[in-house]
Image (tube, rainbow over all chains, first blue to last red; front, side, top):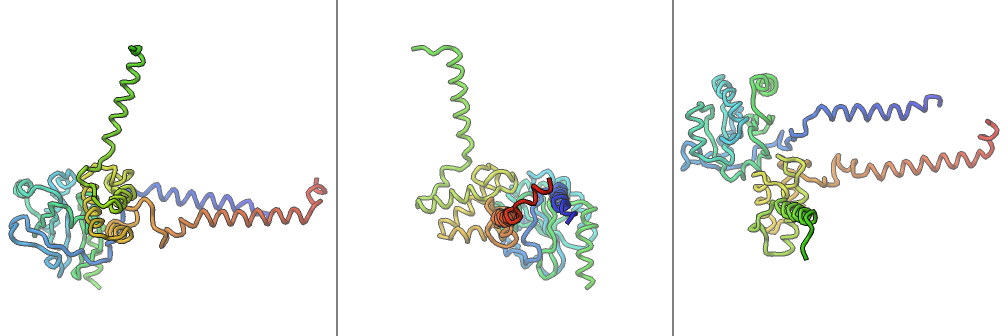
Length: 176
Length: 145
């Protein structure tokens, strides 16, 4: 019974640890409830050929990235070089979701900076983006061959993120 | 009756601040729904749904494009006759519980909701036990002195 004074001390330490963990986390990175779920269905016009559509079924079948971008998004310009590098690695196709953008500007962007996308879907009204839980570009989703979302990265893509977060997930699933 | 100069300045400042507050209302006039009950639900949801790009604002307070998109989406669902819980389910399916300023009473959040009540009950039990022990041992404290 002599040690009873330790109860509040232990309580304080537990609280301090939890609050300390809380401080290290970034509240702007909202976890996605879509991880582990199938990609939302969609049918959108293609940027390169607006009379043809691209759907969720086009993405399924192999590992793929879905990258949400727009010409008004500075982080997208920042990551663009990395996306081209990833596309050249030829491990996964990258599909673009051009979010609330003007198609003429988007086409210019791809002409000037290079096009890492296998295909780009045009979501001018932002409805499909809401279905994907998108709240800020750039966002990059990793999809497995069954069309399940394995991972979502918010903020510009980097080689380091690709190597530490995306590649291990692909290797793990592809290996098993 | 002419106002004194300081009074005029004060009233000018007051008017300026008062007029400035109008810009706080981000809601567009064309977003109003004819049915009063639906309009009430729409307005309430606008104040309960978090704008995720500007996290300390509701979508009703925010001018962010995503907030406008979410208002449009909610407005269409309200007009289509969907219930409050259906609309909230739609939002949490996509953005998680964080999107609601007032999290629902389920899952891990239920523990948080219940925590204040549980703590008060624990406090009452602890206080009751201490008081009972002290009253059952009336003179022990005095003899220790």
